[in-house]
Image 1 (cartoon, helix red, strand yellow):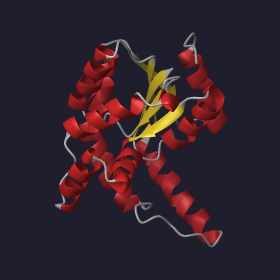
Image 2 (cartoon, helix red, strand yellow):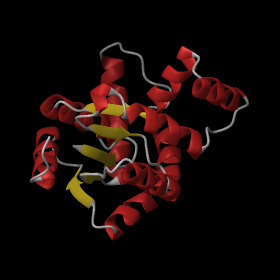
Image 3 (tube, helix red, strand yellow):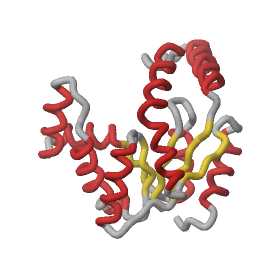
Length: 196
């Protein structure tokens, strides 16, 4: 099973990805984790990425696609994967499609968690209050102002990816505002006949 989970920051992608990993025995592939691992390992791609990131620039799509290319060939990803944090743009989605086609693979589903942005802001405010009440540390980006900025970036860059996959007939939407268990149930229903 090869999946992409889409949705704005705070929609619950991480929670649902973890459940899919546990339920179907597939791996979650985070481009951020892959980049950090390549840098830490000092691979050729890691050194290239580090130089770019150290200069304060975004790692180009071609380099990220090369990392994904290598990662999906790993033994643990052969049974399937969920892409986390990729694709963020239509150009990245097109590059991913080309990469998978070159390998004779395709996506089984693109699941979008449909959410209400005003409710997301309230969710973040509640999470901050709960974390503080428990004496926990609040993430630096876990505040309404940061979320508004991240949502705006999502609308501009990543939301068009939904349209791209919708036009290809691959997009399946679920109600991301439902309780966690209900969202999981809707995802499983959307996956329908997709074999793990």
